[in-house]
Image (spheres, rainbow, N blue to C red):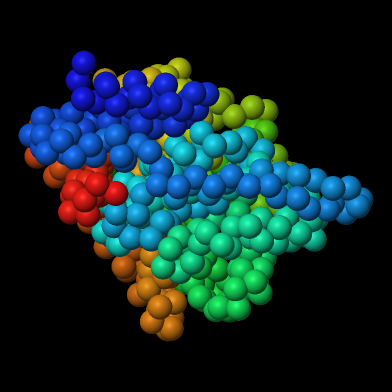
Length: 444
Ligand code: NDP
């Protein structure tokens, strides 16, 4: 049995009932084969066995009282996966589907994504099975305060710096920051994605979506194509989806779809983003309300149908495994030439295979959505220096980072004999830096 298969087997046996974690580990490890065949020292140092095991996993009770006076109990998680190249860094997800396996898959991916940004941050992830949807602001505040009342002892500006993810935006970060400061009596950049009045960075809100478009733009350019005139299908209507749509439109593309967990909208004339922002950001409403404002648009129940809409570029920006093999075939037969993953692991392994077989340009999440965490690292830098950079300054740095990521992953793919395979390129380029840091630091 090969070294990779041996470790994969161990991961499956040791972590039962965590399919998303198995999926993420399999994808990364299998694509490392060409590297491992020349770097035998990694095997001797047990790098794979160590990198698949989180350094620390914290699971805790989060009790809170709802508006009816009823006691509610959620479960909180923080997985501190790898600190070889810097303090743990990665978002918090609040969604009813959250469990340890989901947090571990996200934390594992985060190690390599953070490495690709070129900034000194390790990998971690956390969250809770709490659902902020339908809760009052006070309920969300009480939950966030309770969550931080345990989490505070595990994190810190030089230890572990969480950020947002699904269900955690500016409101939740604000409540958690307030509670952290109150308990610790320290004003430090312990969370990123903060509001602009208390240490946040310009462009952080836009960063994942903008970064996705910068990277996809670079991939298209490298292949003699461009975003201008492209017809784009985007899923999701949260933070990543909205700002991916904004930048794509600024660069001359037409975005025709958006969705939430209930269904999707199709506006053949092009989505009006102001309406989406009003519905989702201001009113915290549902995407189907869009057709009340624009009767020419269509609303369809269910999420998977979104990939049957003809487009030239698809950007899945909602959640994991939202684009399967069947959807990928539909996209290809409708003329889709490129896919950029805004969400984490949105394409199933079967979908990625279909894209590969049909020469669809494919930008994997750990490279394509790294703009968010890269800008979080820029927020940490500004907090440490106690100054704020302008929008232009941060946006320029973000664009440079994304262009460099593209260059690094495409040249890593070429160097290891899989030219054009950006999945392999991203995994190899992200892995080498972390593995070399682990080698230098001994068996820890
Ligand atoms: P938000 O909570 O802002 O938005 C999530 C969007 O996805 C919503 O439209 C939501 O719909 C939809 N969605 C969530 N779960 C499901 C589901 N199970 N099925 C269908 N749709 C679903 O989150 P973000 O935009 O921040 O995150 C989206 C993705 O991007 C995630 O995979 C996240 O890990 C990834 N990401 C986010 C980063 C960031 O900076 N925010 C950075 C890097 C990656 P509904 O409202 O109905 O729940």
